[in-house]
Amino acid sequence: MMKWLSTCLLLLTSLSSSAAVDIQKDTLYPQVELDTSMGKIVLELDRTRAPLTVDNFLTYVVKGEYDNTIFHRVIAEFVVQGGGLTTKLEERPSLEPVVNESGNGLSNSLGTIAMARDNDPHSATRQFYFNLGNNKKLDPSKRRWGYTVFGEVTQGMDVLEAISLVPTEHNTTLNWPDFPVNTVMLKKATLLPR
Image 1 (cartoon, rainbow, N blue to C red):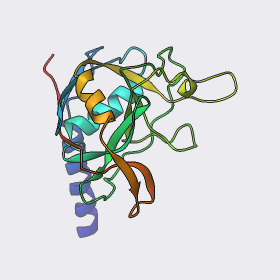
Image 2 (image 1 turned 135 degrees about the vertical axis):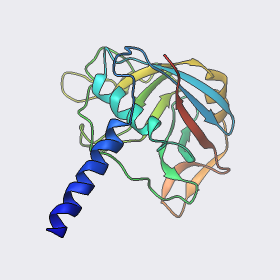
Image 3 (image 1 turned 30 degrees about the vertical axis):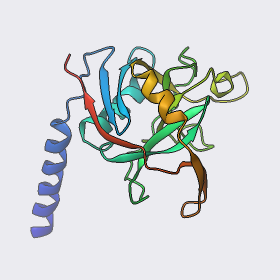
Image 4 (image 1 turned 180 degrees about the vertical axis):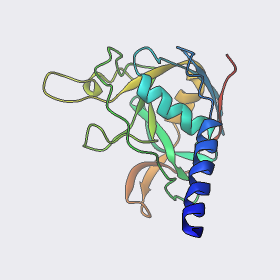
């Protein structure tokens, strides 16, 4: 009986916490502000072209999961990537992977935001990147999946360009290249009011 009650309580807690998450399902082009250690960036997301990806990203935003994470991959004129690591270089927990929506007609062009993933095309979870160039090679083709673009920068391209120029090194702890020498933080991500 106690086990059954515990299970019911856990289920109710889970349902109430997910019900409290308002990701503006009725807004086709929600806006998000990213407050970084180098300035603010405002994004307009495109739910008409990438509904699953936008919902996934906004769930992390609204739950505060991007707050106090770092940008861990910076390559000038290519990408600035973040959303997955704490300042202690620990990976943040992820939700289930989202289905790849790269064939939505949006291109990995300068000033867009897209989902990072592994080799598996449907492995994107929480990490995202900004395109700092026209990266058409990241778009889908007849023979391969691409990387899902789901929005664009409407304010703060100068901030992204400044981030893209920070000195980087090979991080020996993670064995990752292109890691900023000095921490560049995403202090807070906020879903802006309708």
